[in-house]
Image 1 (tube, rainbow, N blue to C red):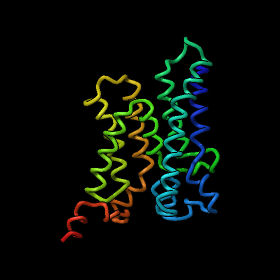
Image 2 (image 1 turned 120 degrees about the vertical axis):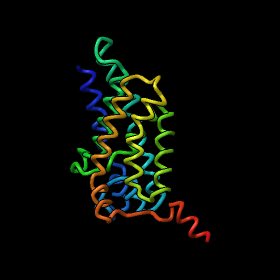
Image 3 (image 1 turned 180 degrees about the vertical axis):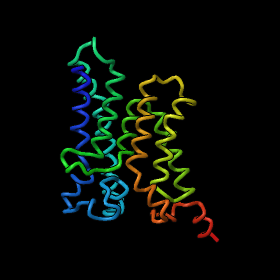
Length: 216
């Protein structure tokens, strides 16, 4: 149990570093006070442009790589060979770092919505899954123009892809996919409400229909 506790703790502490908020301090910017009020890469893009959002994305993915890779391995080494397997510790770390991104200890428990950090965990554990999930995200985004909808559908696609297209993966990844999908749907519940109320912001410029309309 020691190795599991350490893996969860290490991942939560590193995950609590929210890069949109940490980097925003150098600009005297709190992205939670602008746009959607969310401390994630999408709102960082609205608040301060592409370079800032790209740096935030790299940080959010990178902390997941660190948590699921070296830190989970360290926890496994400290705990010894007779506890949880490294695979389960990595999955636990992936879940913990994603939760921490959304509810960060260092930032009053007000963070982002977790998708980029979850993708970072997938990237460390099973890189082909990231390509499939991002492919779904792009297809839904250019079809609808709604980032939130694209993110929810992409997250929900992960366990389906694992179960039916990548069946050679272990059960640990499937559980992370299921848990991650449900958690991302939960963190995007405000997007669902806004969509049902007709208030969800839509990026018309990325929609296929907008391309044809502009071309005409």
